[in-house]
Amino acid sequence: MNSYPAVILKKGKESSLERMHPWIFSGAVARTEPEPELGSAVRVLAADKRMLGVGFWEGGSIAVRMISFAERPVNEELFVERLSAAWKMRNELGLTGSEKTNAFRLVHGDGDGIPGLILDWYAGHAVLQAHSYGIYRQAETIASALKQVCGDELKQLYDKSKSTLGGRKLSSLENRYLFAGGEPLTETVIRENGHAFKVNWEEGQKTGFFLDQRDNRAKLAAYAEGRRVLNAFSYSGGFSIYALRAGAEKVVSVDSSGPAMAMLEENLKLNGTLKNHESIKAEVQPFLKERAGEFDLIILDPPAFAKHKSARHQAVQGYKRLNQAAMERLKPGSLLMSFSCSQVVGTELFEGALRAAAIEAGRSISVLERLSQPADHPVNLAQPEGEYLKGLLMRVR
Ligand code: SAH
Image (cartoon, rainbow, N blue to C red; front, top):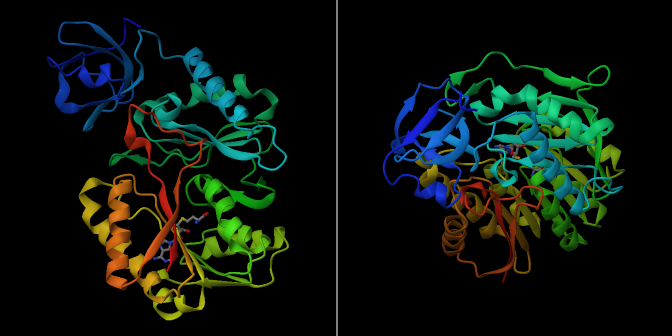
């Protein structure tokens, strides 16, 4: 590993690494020897040449993402170690080998010590997304390590990395099966808390399914009996099916995506929940203005309104407008389950937006539960930026 290019930091800039934060910003770098290729493994040294660890050269405002604070090679052995630890943790969580749930996030980036790697597990069908050049370059090594760790339980591994990263085009990754035991499949049926969902990783959004809402869907089920439920931004109907099977009086699912509505229809059939359900392909905001008053439980789970800090202010305004439209029309005793998955909008900011929405709507609102991402989407304590999903379950007084 002495062959890895060296990244030498400016004086004093090693302090964030000493707090085990895994990012090095470009302003902290004094020089590189030699200039590393994008995504290649690098050694990181303090100004006094003290070894600080190894990482991936990302070359943007985040210059390096650390994978180890010790001096060690970045090879299959390292990935086997990290993937085994990730698998063991999901096993302790009762997710592997479970009858009720066979889909989960196996690797959540820095929360599992592998910066930039997302690995979702759909009943033996793994789907990878590289969110860093480092992981993009290591995809084949990761595939081989995953085979070692999962053995026959791994049926295939599909690479769903975007073809551009940080504005730069990567060589084509489209429809890349890094590993397939037999003829590659594009979809399967998974179980989540005993409910069935069809997941198609090639055509679906993200890696195919929003695994991060598993615990919150189960929470919703506990409140849904006898209620008239609106599932706004429903995607393939996760919350809708939980509500119907928990005895909701009716459920209306709204999403603007045609393919999402088609998946929802299939999922309703799979679960025998076609009754008391209405699917509507529409924009949520105008729908709320027209019909929100018909419901006594509304779920708002919009896509990230802000992907970058620059869009943060606008995003907060967006959350406020959206929630206000629901709050204005909900009668006393109604519930509102509202989420933000924008990483740059923190919990305080999001709650502030909801507070402002309640004031504008002239409603008194009680917070019943604070909601977050589940344990298979862990956050590295040293890097709070890894927390992204936040929500409140509220009751209108
Ligand atoms: N709650 C879902 C995930 C929602 S993801 C689940 O548990 O699986 C966000 C969804 O919002 C996507 O399906 C997207 O198609 C939809 N969407 C985005 N903008 C929208 C809009 N303005 N109106 C309606 N749906 C929208």
